[in-house]
Image 1 (tube, rainbow, N blue to C red):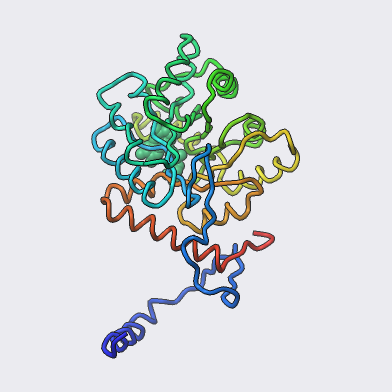
Image 2: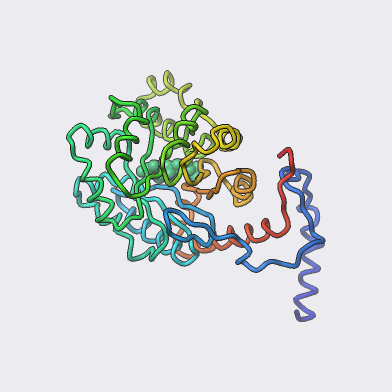
Amino acid sequence: MTKSTISSRKLDHIQLAFESQLSDADQRFYYEPMLSAHPELNVIPSTTLAGATMTVPLWISSMTGGAEKAGKINLLLAEVCKTHGLGMGLGSCRPVLENSEYSRDFEIRKYIGNQPLFANLGIAQIEELIAKNELQKLVDMVNRLEANGLIIHVNPLQEWMQPEGDRFALSPLETVKRVLDVVDFPIIVKEVGQGFGPKSLAALLQLPIAALDYGAFGGTNFSKLENLRRESVERTLLEPVQHVGHTAIEMTNWINQLHTSLGNKVQCEKIIVSGGVSTFLDGYYHLQKLSMPALYAQASPFLKYALEGEAALHQFVEAQIKGLALAYTYLTLKENA
Ligand SMILES: Cc1cc2nc3c(=O)[nH]c(=O)nc-3n(C[C@H](O)[C@H](O)[C@H](O)COP(=O)(O)O)c2cc1C
């Protein structure tokens, strides 16, 4: 460092000192500065999902498709996955099922390389396929997208709040079981912003699925989003429903209890912690706390940076990886956190 850069840094210190007062320490971790040198980025343990390797346990939650800009966003997300070793779920692939003009938004295998890529469809569309005896269309869709498997999103409150929403004739559990009886590719089951209660979690853990994805309360909430699309009177009347649900922390505690109590009845392979995971430290917290193998996931933060462009998106992911490397090196979870 030159003499002039050192003196300008020292000047910054004097000017910024009063703005740099902090009193809110993160109470979840022990910080041990004495025991490690600075990490290499490869200190982060790699993981697998449905046989595909991820060098970082970070998943991009299902988002767009079927609208202007969506194809470009999916392409950017796929490329960032390939560069940094992440995995990604597509947004609802209904346009692919229906062979619409937007199907190409979802054809991103060539951009994501060998990273895990999952197609996505809602319970309502799957029920419809079951009713028409057309589950083969699911298989064709996953093959066409060269996806590693399928995410089934479970969204009874969203459908109920949606002015043009579908109604379920079967329980989502029954629908998922029927799919599992027929297909031989990996299945992930997720919510879309309300999370799952303990009985639903117990039922899901006992299914032979690749992962259970929280879609927890505390982040983007699709019941709220659908309600915002309603006329104002009805919107106000239905507003309390939006607040129903479970946070990721609540669900992580239940998963640990159920993992112990269900023992070898657990067939689900992995947990994906999503819904309001705002920083890599939140993600790291869950990865450390869960007794089952896990990834953490985000949707809206990726969308925010993808909308800003390629450079911003890469910077966002690089910052998460650097932060995770630091966390794996210097932070351990407190016993009661
Ligand atoms: C623009 C947008 C579109 C989404 N579309 C889907 C979808 O098609 N299928 C799905 O399962 N979830 C969808 N989600 C929900 C996310 O996958 C995720 O569960 C939810 O946003 C919570 O994550 P977050 O708090 O990090 O945003 C969407 C989310 C956003 C922001």
